[in-house]
Image 1 (tube, rainbow, N blue to C red):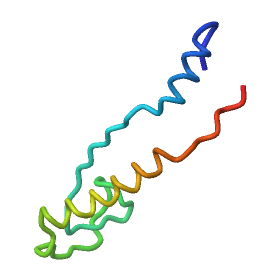
Image 2 (image 1 turned 60 degrees about the vertical axis):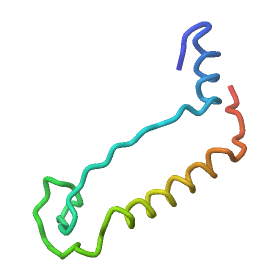
Image 3 (image 1 turned 180 degrees about the horizontal axis):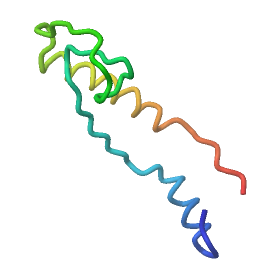
Image 4 (image 1 turned 120 degrees about the vertical axis):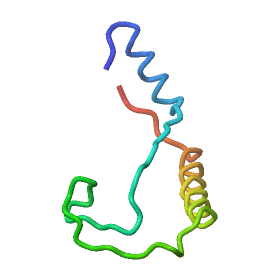
Length: 79
């Protein structure tokens, strides 16, 4: 939402699809009842098989999927 010339700016920003950055933090080997870090731990597991190269491979595939979706044509918003 924008006022006066701000309406054009908002639409322009939306069409540019600015880059977003997400930072994740987690604990491997624990599951909670709420799936959040403040929940009660209901399950523990080993995670010795998880290493940096496997995490990098999974994250790269997620990033590639999002980049592909980013370049697909998006219908402009009707005002």
